Length: 304
Image 1 (cartoon, helix red, strand yellow):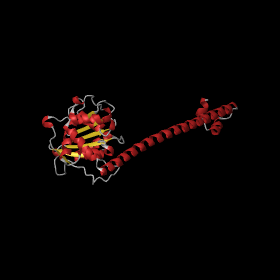
Image 2 (image 1 turned 135 degrees about the vertical axis):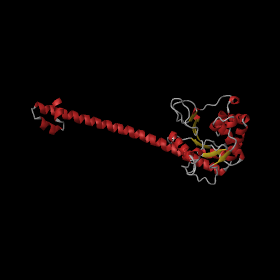
Image 3 (image 1 turned 120 degrees about the horizontal axis):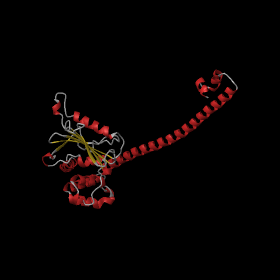
Image 4 (image 1 turned 60 degrees about the vertical axis):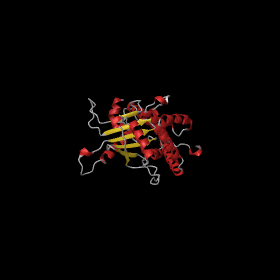
């Protein structure tokens, strides 16, 4: 594709341009993606979605701090929020719970009963690791009773997809739907994985559709500029964090050296006071006078 090589779908603006449009194809691939991530099968499968914040490049102002999440509701009136993050910059556990609570609260108005609250699902796709308690790349969280582990209510569901933990199977033929999608997200946009992408599109019609959409997205000059600006902002943020860490370590080492020197000086002063006090006591000087001269207390002098 020359200069118009495929952009990475892990960039949030590209992800939303791919999955967040009102076009039929975009909805088809998003429905397939969600059913794979949520393991919805049979009657539980999502068959229709409605975008609550559809992608519109003209409305995207390029705010470096803006959050490009994707919000949809299903035909069952479930709410789903999807966010892609490649930088670990915040407390994502609390952040995810806050996003869930905010979305959950939006499903009721003041005039409605609590029973009208809708199931709300948050899906976090991350290119870093925050769950150290397990090696599994996909974890889901609900409100469960602490001993028997039954759910208090099924309205809360928070998912973490940690891509560094995900390793594709060597044989694409035996991949499940979720593995196909995660392989696509993790590897697309890298020149060394073009053969892998070819195998993916041969295996899945929806991923083939996603690749064709991504080709059109990648050829859009305005979107490419937004992409590069977004990537620059991300790399700048990483650089600032690394710089702060380095300066913090340098400051810590410097403070450590200063603290060591100060501690040495303090110990030297104390030893000097004790040495003078002992000499004065040998001269039978009253303890109160020695205490005044050395700064040591009379109790300390008695111990000497």
